[in-house]
Image 1 (tube, rainbow, N blue to C red):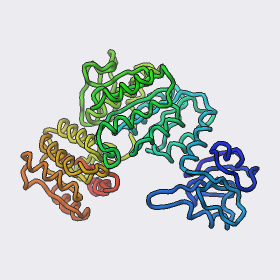
Image 2 (image 1 turned 30 degrees about the horizontal axis):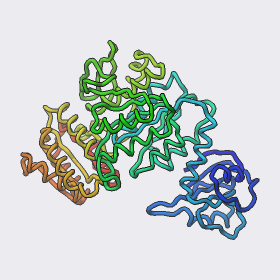
Image 3 (image 1 turned 30 degrees about the vertical axis):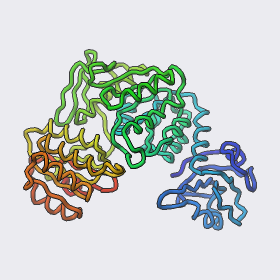
Image 4 (image 1 turned 45 degrees about the vertical axis):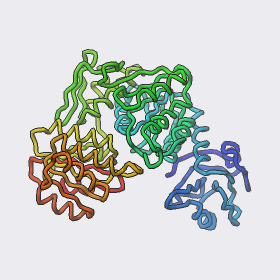
Length: 456
């Protein structure tokens, strides 16, 4: 990533608390973490990842004079390019972004949760846009690299921001909240995501609650009342002396629709006498729409304006996009975990109950020791929601097939593969024009490649 940023290396050393080595008067015109995007005005910040280490590029960048300066955890090279030695370059990037964010006085909505973060962010952005000049993460740049770069793109034209925050380890949301400093928070839900690192859904709830850590007393948080562990999240907010507002279909929700209707290509809900329609599918998106309405009202947007703006909503790709191709394809391939898959299965099974529904499901990653059981339970949901066919891809997803079979689905309608091409070949021979096919799996499974074959 690369972003315009003006400052001196001396100021960077002060902000990060690092040791300045060389000429501190060097002026920076951009910050870059991708060596391929650097220029001779760039501050290069090398990041250590699971598969790469940006420090490996420092020598060549300095030798070829392709950067102005750099941060480093250890690699001080011999080319006399000035640098700042720091303990952790990722945390240093966050400090720089946090310092920059502090120069802006504008309301920031922070969003986290197991599922629905990006859709909810886009819905809130849609509701606020027109009343505010709103900045937001592009795509799902919601991690400890994406969020700092999002903050570094604030400019004087912005008077509000919607920032999505993701995590897979304890402490990540805490660090992100410290630099985002949200004035309003939204918790979309709590589910079995990243259990490989967090262990239990209770721990997921506690980790998501870290968003409250940098909020001022009296700030407002909106929490999905229908989620598991609502008590953990709401108590964490109240402990911080925040104002809790709940939304959802639960009878005790503060914000709940008078009625709602799930249609094949849209959701229609009535709230306070106003009819609101959005081109989304599924009950899970009823929750996301309610969150957007709640934040919109809180920030002074009338319900009539909310309704007008949501009619033209466009979601990010691979998040429940419905496309007509060789059949009706619901491309929900961006990612998957047990909660999001349950929601998708429930929605498709309910909305398209009169159609031949086919689930094409890939492995769900980062579920730890419970992975086998959780996949099996999702198979039970495939059977429960009346799917007529099930195709699985991957070793873990084969347990979805077992769960479906054990819960009454005809084994002759279940097909398991470990090769994507063979799955597609079998699927293309099976599908009919009027079929409805749900495609979903973890990001690494690249299930969108299956969806693309069905759309052609």
